[in-house]
Length: 484
Image (tube, rainbow, N blue to C red; front, side):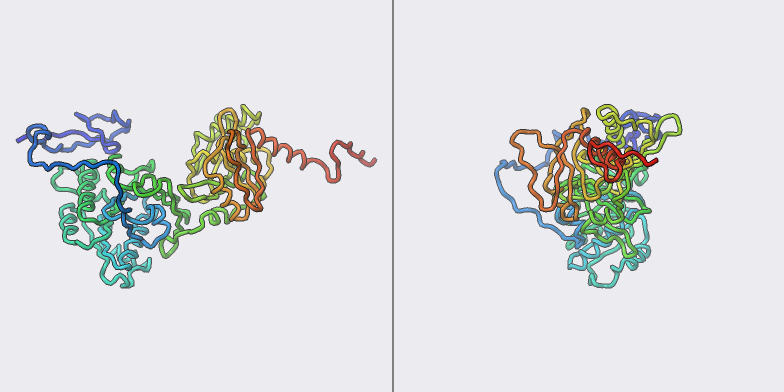
């Protein structure tokens, strides 16, 4: 029988190493290698093993019914999942501590139990009484589930697996969290790479064989990524991230992977005393406190997954005190901001590079699509010229290194969302490709197409000249001399 051997595994990326060293060669992290006992391998390669059954191969042509869905009763959560939970699927939910992961999953499990399905909630971090106190605060412990909700506190994988084997009617299982579960066959601490991988694989196997949907809660690192090996995200069918500031009432649930729905779909929630409340119209919520007469502000018409979202982009310029100017960005890519500043200076002759630049996406939403370039550029030019943007206008378009404004997808969807919220104008890229269809005419919406970033800057420059001209003065006419 082969002997167990020890090895060192990086707790950040899961890469093995033959001996301990201060820095992981794979990911570059320091002090992340932990000694673990590798599983003993049997004699001979796996290809020579006997006793397996033959796998049936089928052709590509065929039809199958779409997978059935388990509706959670929370519309925003069902939207992110692609229409509800799929039986036998595995979902990984990550987010900062206190962001609302346990709250939303407890609410979803309680609603599923209220609809007549068996829902199980296993907590490895809190005692049963602590979960009951949260349920009472959320108002979900009123007995309307009629005994269909099961609550337990356990961390041993053997105990959890044996309990799930005895629940043939279970439709949903929530494991909060996967980093607290441990398997006694592995000589390593809970939360290590080996423990997380082995425990997650066993729970997912149970979900596939027993037919219930399992939701795994995962911790995140200080960089905001899921703790443990990246292989954990490849093992599950969907990966959801909770975004937002703990001091802010808005929460964004984003799908970064989904085998049963669209990726980059978002759900918007508001944290209240009664838990997380879904926001059906996030655009109106993000723009509720917007002031249209302030320079450095522009409205971006974006698309998150299949949903159009309007959000305010704010920019502030201040003279640098010396040294390197600061670039503080919240909710957007700092590298893309540096590119836009370089384009404005080089292609549009705007001297704003020596100023401190502060950029913020209001509402706690993080924008990832390049279509926000034009809105950010409008906010930057507005702050530099101290001229507010049109309060009734939205902006969207991608900006290239030569200053050209490129086309983006789903133009009509963005325009219709702007028209629905009462906006009267939109600045968008000019059509340059032959045969490209013009944007659909939206009643009450004035469209301004631009092909280069200089056209946007020229509009603010013309507005500045118009503002400086005295009232009553005609174009090209000399001014009346001042009275003596």
